[in-house]
Length: 212
Image (cartoon, rainbow, N blue to C red; front, side, top):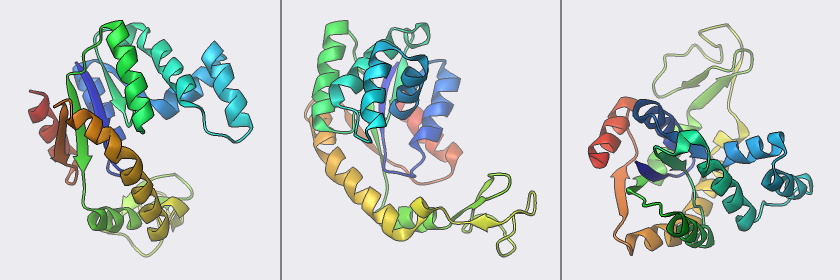
């Protein structure tokens, strides 16, 4: 099973990718994770990526693609994998398509977890994190006593990236970057769009129905 999974910031695609990866016994490939791993292992591509990261620059597409190619050669990816949030841009999608064709890899599903911007902003701005134990809560779901963590008594706070103006900006960037990518896969009759809001188990069930 080869799956590409899209979704705006905070929709929970990483959570769903981990669940499916565990249940289906296939690799979960998230670009942020494999970039950090390649850098820490000082692979050839990791060294190239580190040079850009040390200068505070974005890692170029060809380096990211190279790191993904290296990752796909590992044993756990041979039975299948989930690409979590990649490709992010049209050039990345085109480059990845060439890599797959050269390697004889056929993508089974490209799924975009769609969500109403207003609902997403409402959900994310209600998120609170404990400064002490790191537990995450949501004002829309959890019964909380002011700003006190119900687990350890620590202080609950709102992260900067959970503030409305930040979320709106991230959402706009995602929409602008991802639309050409979705069109790329839509033109290949590969794209499936699904409702990305709901309880974790409910979303997992929707994804599994599509995969069937």
